Image 1 (cartoon, rainbow, N blue to C red):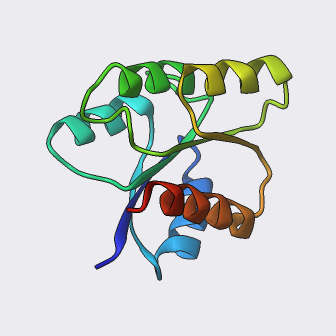
Image 2: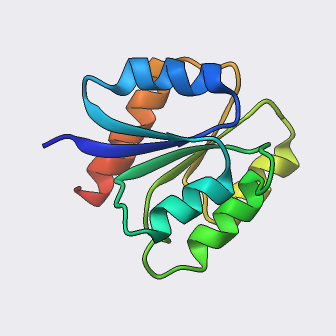
Length: 125
């Protein structure tokens, strides 16, 4: 059975690239913003890992991390943040709030894949 990967990004092109890259190995779900993703998760959908953009409408990546961390159901889901912002303060903020990793756009999907696999291996999903 495929592991489930949730992609949260308001740029459709990023979602399509990641879906294309990961679809062979993961069951991929794409949501366009943090609020849509939280609603979907709260409906009872389970995922093994989340890849989310930092800058999104309705609920930005920082607020998305806070929402995940405040839930006993979602706080342990591995989370990689993607961002076009290369500010050290943004990276630290995301990691301090509970993101497991932070990657700068543009990124190599293969590198993201390795980071996800390493996180999943460490928690033995």
